[in-house]
Figure 1 (cartoon, one colour):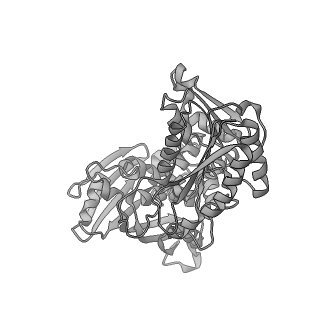
Figure 2 (cartoon, one colour):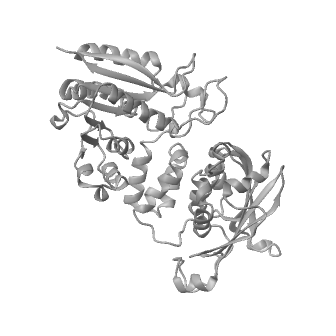
Length: 463
């Protein structure tokens, strides 16, 4: 089983720093699935290639019954020792785990920089459909060359194998390239050598969330990665629906250089936390909390004495509880948090009289006719001291190179507002319910297009 990755960036041999593997050494790693070798066939300032070679013990595959092929000879006659699949994905995670996380102490700028890369997989399963390989990798920006492999070159009448010889070329951060391979290789193979449990959905979002949420084949990818386990698939798709392309770094306005910025999601949470501190909030509701990213930040700040995470999805709440590890938190920390199943468009007396309600990237997921119900539920019934709303700024979308003209950032968005449209919704609403409203940019502020995310801070005025 073989994979090679080539960089042609300036100082190409710096690839060794990113992979934490010295180009001058042949390194061997003993893994549960076999033995992995890391070698560099070439390493110069202009071109550097690393190869991962995985030796699989075919007898161990038979004895351990790692795969569930049908038929009496399937365990003995198969392509598992050389065809890329979940065995190779596990080796990638174990051998190149730090690189996959984007960790590179002392070379952080290099880890954040897209590199010109060529990836070669000489035997990749694709169920006899090279078009499927293109459908998975091309939306991620790769140029794909997939040549079908014959079963036997001397016997053309036998037809083609289920394998392709795949070459990917493109420009990407090394961490992104590795995580895409980690997810998509076993997806194309269609069968994993280990049992798929609930933690596999967490792994999928951890490795693929930044790009999978906007992938046109995300449902097919999710089903295959989670072995068609319906509950896990539904949970993962629900959680993916809370993500958008702004989980990655938003492109800066022209003239502001190419220094790596914080992910927009991080900037958005920082802006929300700053607004909560500005209004002196201690009792906070995260309405539409989803996977619990903001809840984690609120729990880490002792300023917030009482925290409510509310979402319409029971699966999302269960996922938040699992990812926050509530059962492992100290009692005093855990007692500060309550999780509630409710909707932003339903009146719920449990949400009344709080210092602040946060609607972070929520309103754009609501059908426009239901926004009136949200207004009544939040500003009329709950009437917190402050409301913080963040939503994408549609005017900034042309800065995203991979976003087609007129498209929205996420397929679950019902709309995306311009700055003027956001103001025309927020200002009359504030006046109707006795709030003053302040607008703040989130992310790099373009003089013409504004910021990628817009924030409205509503403060209830004294009667």
